[in-house]
Amino acid sequence: MPVSRLDVVYRKFLLTKFFTKGWGSPEHLQRLFDFRQIISNRDSCYQLVPKHYPITILNEVKRSDCRILEGKFHSPLTLYLPGLVPEEVQDSYFQMVLPLEWKNSHKPMCIHLAGTGDHYFWRRRNIMAKPLLKEGIGAIILENPYYGLRKPKDQVRSSLHFVSDIFVMGGCLILECLVLLNWCEQLGFGPLGVTGISMGGHMASLAASNWPRPLVLVPCLSWSSASSVFTEGVMSDSIDWDMLQAQYENNKSYCDNLSKICRIVDNPFASDLSKPTEGAIELSNLDQSDISNITPHELMNFMNCSSFSGVILKPLDKKKELQPAGEFSLANIFKDKPPLALNKKVNQMKTRDKEALWFMRGMMDECTHLKNFSVPYDTSLIINICAKADGYVPRGGLTGLEDIWPGAMVKYVDCGHVGAYIWHRKIFREAIIEAFNRAKLKIGPPSPSVYEI
Image (cartoon, rainbow, N blue to C red; front, side, top):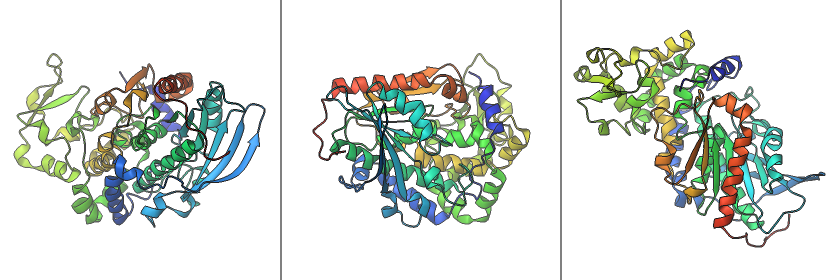
């Protein structure tokens, strides 16, 4: 299905630029890659957060239809990666939205994570939390690192300075969700769940993978990796690839060290970055099993090696001839423009900066691909909502969620990313309600509260 024109046009009107200062310190990235090995394993990650982690309630407001508590706690990531979390990001803030009275012995509670640009609490509170409260589902709205109350003073809007910032953001959210889920259990809430839209959906998926008990998970408008978002989707037009390429070439730590340890999980030649025209391609006379799980460094050497210049590419659909097969080779395939890039200037920049693009792909896969994380404890409680014509989150060439998480359900809305958020939020809420109803049938009422709130 073609990419939504609304997604393309909407992105062009936004001023936000991403990674305006570059990749981030090579030393910081190395520490993040090392920590990913720990945080992506449920057993090791869960041990990082004490069960009775200190949380402070700052304020409570009682309204005609709900109670709203505001609280904070210190992000556990600061304990394990000192020096990487900016001072403004270190304290985590949240709002808890509770009904005045619970309908029965179940007290379902859902953590809502923020999408790109969703600062503070009001949007998620009014669009998601309050409508769900009418269905008896409470909410915790967690302020995103680098957003709202946690935005660094020198950051403009949602413009993260470094690529490394988004990995710090993810690490914070994974551990912070564990803090809140443990706390909710002690307060007698359950079943528990986590959800989010767009970036929030992917962060919810990462967080849910590390909870050692059944957990509702409803990611909306996200997929199996963030790599395609920043290299192929419309948001890739907001990145200065020339600057990233220059940094990559000028600092040997990126190309000689880091590009050798992060891995592109799926076959890079199946992604839109590699397609010379519309339609998927495959390599002939080559064992594709050797291509998946390849490092950016290996890939660039592979592409530049003259001995592979004769490898033939042909259409996956034998009935659809793109052009004579002999005209495709590894030497020229990457000269063609990506199909999603409608901006000619950006398209030319991407063509120049293939090393930066593939390094980005490898880094994003390394730290965000769901194949690199534990499978959630109970996949039958997962409902994922995707947009068929999503221009922000391309799915081509990435492993499907159903393959990574057998038993999970994936539903589709017939529009793009922006259209789904505008017109189909009710479907997001219905999926959350459905998943919690499933959880109630599987999980008994929660244990009595240890604390009063």
